[in-house]
Length: 117
Length: 112
Image (cartoon, rainbow over the protein chains, first blue to last red):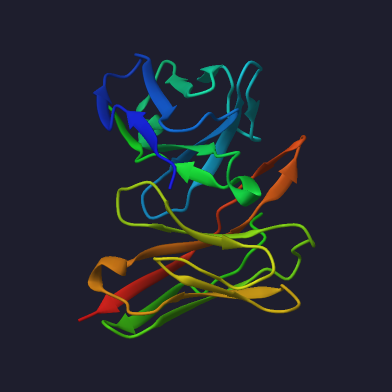
């Protein structure tokens, strides 16, 4: 299957700082990537849809000024958590839609665990 | 809201087939059914997807009913490594694109 990577795999930061998470599609070009958040013992919640060359589309209740998304190339999308607070601590997962596959299947990265102290 | 419903949890004996059901009664004619699984602290892993016909790959088989309102994922010989949360997903159209809305999934425990 298609390969999607994320970096870093885990990060610890102080409250008030910003953290950038990268999502890369390694063997295909993805015009659309997605960002999810997952709290312990819960399912994945879609945060936003990242479109190459245009603004991201955010889900209801997700602050676009707090979670900045940039999709500058066909293989890279970044999520920046600005002024992070302890309640932003979570597991962040990206996915990329593979246009080569029937049904434009999404492939997920391994996730980034963020801990805000 | 997710367009699928699944049992919360299931147990399966190691070496036996695991059959995981999913209801998607509102699925439209051109929508695929996708299955993923998530092992603790990892990103979801793609398993299989299908539209109308049954599908099989090296990981699993997908049986879709003729009316397409439900499907079953079959792991033919479950191993302990198959213990995970399994998600059945039907895409949701929104703002000119499609997105996945995850339900709660089925927590499969394979027992030795």
